[in-house]
Amino acid sequence: IMQTRLNFTHTIEDTPQNQAFLRANRHRLSNLCQLMYNALMTGDRMTTYQANQLFNQTDGRRRFKDLKDAGVHLSQEVVRGHKVWYMSESDIIYNKKNF
Image (cartoon, rainbow, N blue to C red; front, side, top):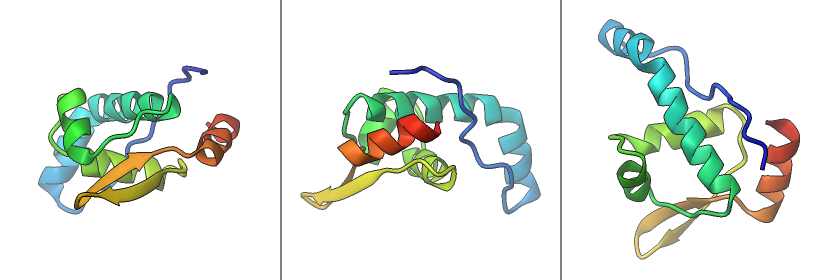
């Protein structure tokens, strides 16, 4: 799998304090998105809790949203009340062509 560095993180926040935090941490947050993207591209499946644990982050939900907002195709299913994120075969094909 190609290990291209992509910038997946959103650029605008809703409050000045959040915007300052994003500006100060954008590189780190984008790296987290990249790690999640790479794992999903290899067939990993994860909940937001698992993403938080695996990548030592506090808001995997936002990183999944960043990936989706960037146009990354993701699939999800609910297992025992928890949303599980993954890339289907067609998601992986699309993402390889476009990212």
